Length: 199
Length: 381
Figure (cartoon, rainbow over the protein chains, first blue to last red):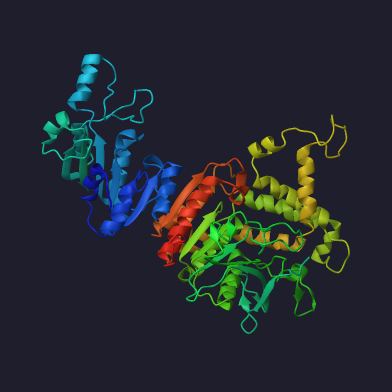
């Protein structure tokens, strides 16, 4: 009855039932609604668009209009068991700060990123000499929200530099199909990757 | 003006109301209106809190002006706050002048109107009276409490003082404290009233002449703070009032002047000057965090079960988004579930009273979810 998008289902699978969850960039609340109903979590959201906020509120969810760059600072330390940031890290102004904020207010962070290291993206730049536009990254350089491009290996580096631990690493296709690959292999092949992080 | 035609309840007869100032009031008469029917388990009550110069006529004609209720757009049969489903209560706040005890009423000790001998009240005092009123009406807990501007301040004081009596709470275009600028505008209004020779140190009730000029100026000043520069420009620009050119005099040459004069002169027919002084003072004294060593979140520690919704408007410079967000952050920090949006609107502070579809969409979703979680059946079920 709850047909959750497969990539969101991967995130939902990381969350323990009954936990406290903040979904940063929760969109229409599909994931949060699933977590509240199926996993009985205490769920909260942050969403920038009015339409998204309205959709969430109509579902009975609690969501604050805002974004990852500006609205995480106000949450007390350890307010949540999980803080979710889905395909947004590359679009924030200060990814390093946002990442550390996620793990300040949450015991765990679930971060997913589109992989700019994937071979299609690399080929696109290498052969065409233009900023890559692929199916997964379908915007041109001047109108993309993605202002901090990173690859899977780049994110591993940042996580290590920040002193955080990767508890689970799930590379997957854009459709949400899990790929059984090492980080180095995934950096070449995977559209996206999910990281379950902890302090 | 002072006697509303509607319902009244006499409260605090045996036990006086102790005010924040330390003074005691007994009895306290409350003018109120109700719409709809209280259900068998008294779970469908909604309390609507009015703003500074509002009143209990939220969804029925005003007894003095004959105008429709101030929120009939949202409150009524089949509307967003559906009086076919909910039992809606709205009462005139303590200190006001439409049936509720205020400076215009007789001081029991002297048999004459209180005037400025009336004790100074706070927003929390208003809320204590409302709590007694809903008990009187057989309501233990509210499905929802909702208010904008000073109405939102009352909602905040309910959250701090009677959270156990709330299931959900909506605050629109409001603040948990008055800033220096808020106090400054109110002081201009009070000084305008007091500068009117007819004010007579607040003892004008026995005279024919009322401080109408002073009250009108107070209203004109305040009215500007309810709008926005864009709204004024869009509505009036520099348009002249029924004339081809400026007159080189001090007549109302400009439409905006004529509009403000009209706002001022119609206001004095329905409002008491001393009530205006007392209620603006109550708002100026509001600083909820100050009661908790500056930590607003601590004020909401017992409200973690209350479903909350806060809405601000982009063009509201009276209670701007930053003040509303302060509330949201405090609720969040206290673990209170809260939704928030800053809604695009050109109308200034008054937006919460006007036709702003995005506000309606958000409110509708929130009200339906609140009713659902309260165990009230869906409209369409």
